[in-house]
Length: 449
View 1 (cartoon, rainbow, N blue to C red):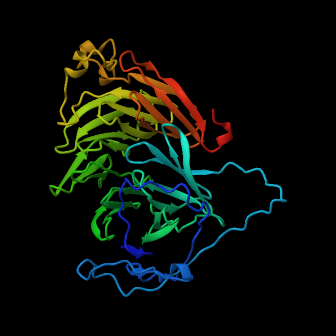
View 2: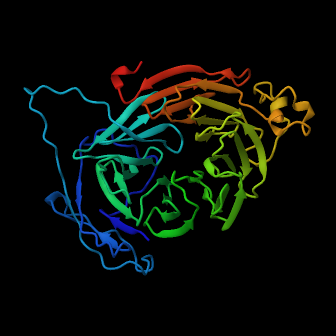
View 3: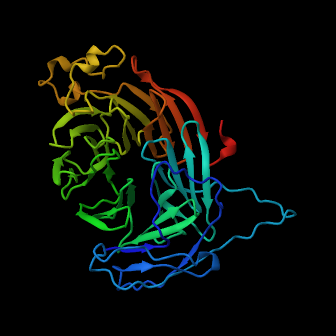
């Protein structure tokens, strides 16, 4: 159900060791003029060049055995380059208006983050905080999804905002070494999110997920889901087998795909609809929250066992993000209540199981607070025996925030849709309020301090 297109050959190796190019043309803005037939959405298209310096483009190489039967004869599409005019030295430069932020996401190791704005996208380093590069488009240029692949030059882009740079039903594969798109995936409906691995591209639609091989864009798997307007999906990033998590076909259900063992596991995680979830890098542990936003549950993805349950609060809340620390010792949660919580997990990530003695026997780890009435567990409601967060950080409630753990020990990085960047430190022994180490407004570099 998708159109696969290639702009150049050979297909680049998505190696995370290949650094993003900060010196590329900051205003590439290639205009893609196509003649798509709406009745032939399932077509493999090769791209030809309209300019002399692009005549070495070749169609995407797919062998006969790799090409699905649904693909038909390629049709040429013209690519032309556009360079915006620069103001003359005598012209006064108008004051730049802060861009409108459309998208925020961390890369796979949480060392960088990407921002999609109303006229392009920007890439930032977390520690130390700095802008790595930006790509500004003219004539609209809104980017609603930016998905990085670690720190390599390949990104996935989807248009967004009132004047999108690309159609909302297309995933554009961007090569920053060439400062242009080198391929695309087209669908019948809007793309909600994209997830990348070194070997896979995962595209999430409202009620369907497509899994492609990165090397040749071959479609490997299709998954049907319940309505998923947020584009919820998570994939493991370990060098071993691929684990994919997505909403199931029932309210409160998550589906876990173990591709190495070809096993599918359905977990009834909550009574209410799934609002957010996160997966460890190795794919063994899954954290979920529902639309109520009061409880976060931790599951073993292999057998669906409930390993731990922690409480964010008593009032309903919209959970914006969940994030594991690299060793699965901590879990961070952000919500519309304006507070980021850090929970201590009692799980051994190497072999998922409850390790009831770890927190008690380790003097360097704070124990999760519980109610003073927890000793009569089973008599009073479950609320009184809940595990609470060990550390918190207060934010302005007006903006959505996403959170991840920093590369420095016991630190978290918080990003806001208002352009705020926080780096905070928590005390793993005593817990309590986190200490703010750093703040920037990445939409207004001059306001950073």
